[in-house]
Amino acid sequence: MKDRSILVIDVWMPTPDRDSASLRIVNLLSILEQMVGRVTFGVGDPPHWRTAEKWRPLVQPLQGSMIRLVEGNAAIEAHLKQQGQDYDVVILSRLSVASRYLPTVRRYAPQAAVVFDTTDLHFLRGFRGAKVTGKVNLMRSALLAKKDELALARQADCTLVVSPVEKTILEEECPDISVQVISNIHTAYGSRKPFSERSGIIFVGSFPHHPNVDGMVYFYQDIYPLLKEQLPDITITIIGSDPPEWLKQAADEQFIVTDYVPDIAPYFDHSRLSIAPLRYGAGVKGKVLLSMGYGVPVVASSIAAEGIPVVNGRDMLIADTPASFSEAIVELYYNEALWDQMSANGLKIIDKHFSFTTARQALTDLLNSLGRTVRVEGSDVYESASITEEI
Image 1 (tube, rainbow, N blue to C red):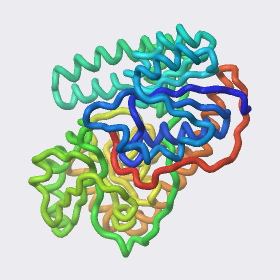
Image 2 (image 1 turned 45 degrees about the vertical axis):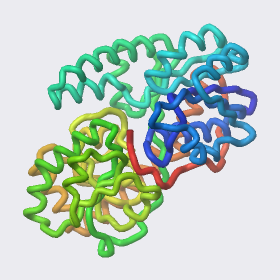
Image 3 (image 1 turned 120 degrees about the vertical axis):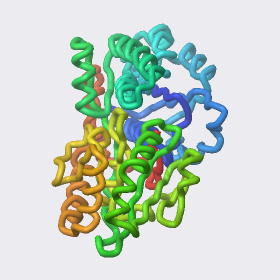
Image 4 (image 1 turned 90 degrees about the horizontal axis):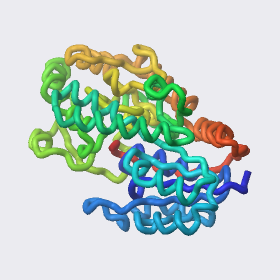
């Protein structure tokens, strides 16, 4: 119903052309605005490397008559003190935001239902990273994150996760809490070129995100040499901001490192397949869903495929050793019938499980579970077709 008021707070201004978490929050905001009316979006202070003015044009579609923007931590605090009593629901996105604002929301908006949106389970990502890399500091951070995330989940009225896997993990840790899944949101653009007109492999991922760096080290050192033996002329394009120096130095005519690109669609239109050789991580991988939405089949690790309802060998190829990963790439690169099957199946999975319609129904279920009955309305929502990175 158009008589509800919702406040959403995120860590900083979203960059929907750069990371899947930003794309998700922007699309959730747009859907909420169409469903319930007045939505306020609070964004914290940007770090020194992330200037809000630079990204403002990316969220201008949100700044219509029904969505208002509150910028900066001080402004959010003041807004809660002055208008907290007006909100029915407050959604706190990410661990750092929920840690900072949940007590303030309870104080100044005691009537509001509080939703903790994890984006992904930080402690799960940390534990997995520590196991793979052996880094003690990751284990320490993971232990702290687990303590904080579980405490926040117990304090919130509902906790959101992006995959059924994380829902199960969280419910095992906290059996008495309310957990719901609202996953990433993508459009099935479809395959714009046939198998015969495509060549090369693509990897998408921002390198400030450590699992992407680790995954690329693994690929370059362990998988790429095997792949070159079977596909000596293969071209691999690595897209993502802030690539490490060693990766830039490794670039040549066949191993292309682009850094950030403003529009990724042409790369997907021309590539035969994409890869996601991640060794650790959490949540649902935007790089995988994005590729599926463009009809480009994926060779992925089990971690990269986690949370996506695929069958290995039918919808994508999943491999967890250098030899099997290289073999999967070669198989999919030459097998046109398999490529066509996986391209079509990927689009069906996006439509069924990660579409705007699916997200709208999940949001309806969430608000109804909080005692705020709403109706689902069809409408256009903002979508960035040029997302190129995943934080």
